[in-house]
Image (cartoon, rainbow, N blue to C red; front, side, top):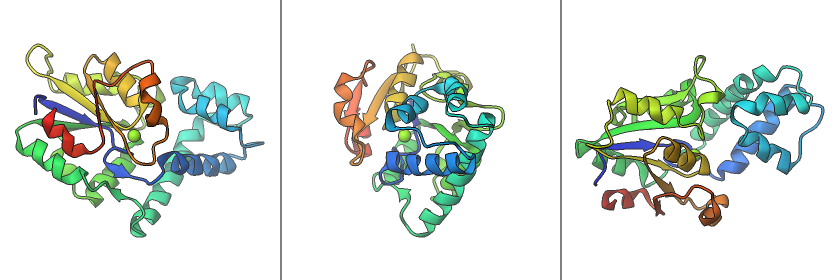
Length: 228
Ligand SMILES: [Mg+2]
């Protein structure tokens, strides 16, 4: 383990939501229905939305959503209820390789953090439910004061964690581990190393070598982290 600071993404990296794209799309459609969207936009439009960052309001406006500012609040609520049900049904859980590697990294006197685009109360619930809160020294998630402008691919979450750790890249090394292009972009922009974890259901990571920003490492199991 040549890194001192390990920053993990949550959904799709530690937490197994099954086919995460399908899951997000389902919550997304329920949210649009709740907000009385005139129509459900096509696949291409929706993809633009997921990558829009702080410009998401403009897209929602274009789609005719009357209260676009309420979008994420509504989305989070629906997401939270859905997760609680699926956890109860054992359809959502930690990946098999998650807990043990967190323990190993932690026991090796390293620092651990989470940077996620998921909202704070959902993250807190998940970490408690699966008994992994103790491993993380810092958590950066979405909340009332932290909006989409801070979400990955923005590096602001990672930079905030680095600041809190008084991180000095001349002394130690930090690694961002995630299952999405946004994790890799955020890490590059924050000037730390990045590691892509390829998960079974994740179709878009199959063509990761065509991404504009390339991960420094690619793994298929979190257990491989101990060799990096
Ligand atoms: Mg993810």
